[in-house]
Image: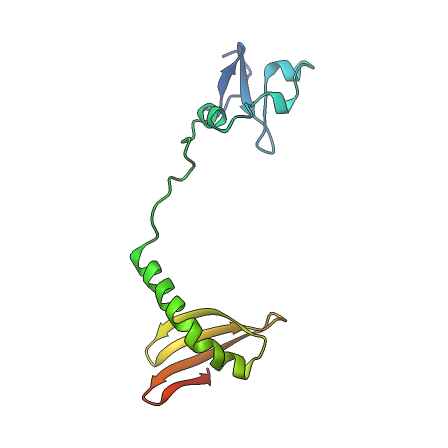
Length: 137
C-alpha cells in the first residue's frame, strides 16, 4: 500500500491494480475514480456473490439465519390461538381496534389493542367457566 492511503481492513480490496476503500455513505471509490476515471458505481461489483466476496461477508447473508428462540415461538403460538377468541370481545368495546399483542399475566392475559388513531388500550382477559371476560386495565 502506498504512503498516505487509508484502506479499511474489512473492505479494502485490489481492483485492477488499485486499492479501493469505503468513503462516507458506505460507497467505495477506486484510485482511478479519484483521478477522474470510473465513478463510485463502477468500484464495486453489481453481482451479489461477488460483492459479498469483496466485502468479506458471507454470501448467504449476514448475520447467518437462525431459528427464533423457543419462548418467542411459543408466545406467537399463544397469540395465534387467542386472537380469534379475543377479537370479538375487543371489537365489542373498540369496533375498529386491532389486537397488537397478547401476553400472559398472573391474573390472565394482557391484551393490547390499537385504534385507528393510534391510541392503545390494554385489557385483562380471563377465561371463565361461562366464557371469557375482558376488563380494561
